[in-house]
Length: 142
Image 1 (tube, helix red, strand yellow):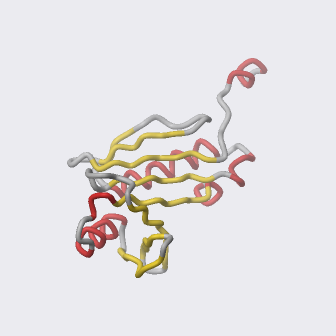
Image 2 (tube, rainbow, N blue to C red):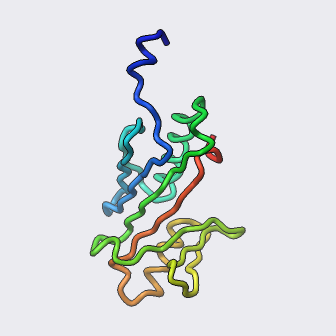
């Protein structure tokens, strides 16, 4: 890349958000950032969408030193109604995934992201307002 190409290259941001939304037959991924991002996309499953997003961000940040201090933040909306009234933080554990509210309470568990969503659906009277939040360090994606 020549001098001018470097001048006009869109910079990367230390925080990039990928909103994953269940559209029924597929999951939609939409990027939110003040820096460069991959193209929005769709995938058939939540796991496929989250993995593709991680791979694309890892590829985009691979040669940039900002990657060491950057985060990929997922905002996951598996339920159509009232998204965001209750936020569950996702953590990866030995047997899969856990999600719990910052306010405490027993965590939900699932060996896949889909199983985690199903655990919330099956153990919550009204899961409609629930969304998930998951932060992944970009350095781990490279």
